[in-house]
Image 1 (cartoon, one colour):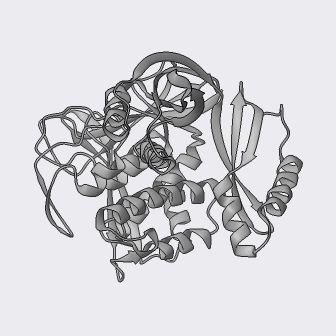
Image 2 (image 1 turned 180 degrees about the horizontal axis):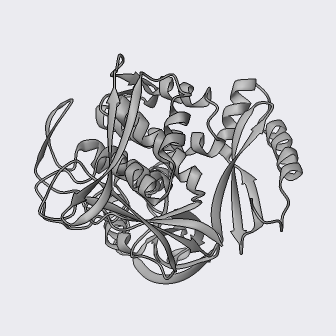
Length: 395
């Protein structure tokens, strides 16, 4: 069993709502502020207090800040996190959320990730929301997050680049592949920060799973509506072993170039496909051919069927819903002589069944140290098996 959290986003999600809800759930606000003040931030003070939102008592957050630097470069934020004494999982989760927002901004504005400057998200309150939220999750010992479908609202919003329709461009980009809930409200309900929390940390989306509720927290948004503008977080224990259903979509292709096939696969994975692969086959008239297999979430079935018909030469697809059984995934950071490496664990009943270092981290170290990739891989693997054992409970 592991501690899990369900985000009930019936009124949307924002970073301050999540942090407030986690404090209402039991995270210590003084300890959160103390950890944040270890970072090179402008002077600030956190004020948590209860407010009534349409009859529901929920926690709110106000931040008193004397801010000198409103805009921050993505690399400056990453360095600030890396150089801190925050717990390794807090660093990993925080950077993952900032990376998601940065990638969205880079795509929207046609620049590289390294060129991204954060505007609204780079402001102090958003940095506090993101890192503070990850600190709160660590305090509460939350290993796995689940989430409902997310409403965005509609209408217009005034952002740094002008007036845009809701959801804002960054929010819409981040929410690709995430189920959206219809809620007819003319206001922004989900912010880029809230969307990035869900995108980066949530394992699966849908209704509350079959589980026993242990604790509930409520975090209030700043706006008032004729409905409770709150985020409800529900803590429960979850089995490590997971079962669900996915959609398998297939077709045969005998008239596309390798370049076009490669483009489609990359595009499909970027759009949220769970997996995609090609199998060499022979078709009628003894033609060498390729079978495309794409796996996606059930609610993405129509989208990916259309993507295949639009982006490949196939005139049709076959689509089947199948059950799958998976080990739960957990991540920990391993400190090595070359730097930190994220380790992915496959767990069953709390026990380690599989573990492996993340490829991208190893590749980065190999390039930085100018050593062969295999040398770095073997060194990290040796340290990994000295630190963890297959069959042990992951602590």
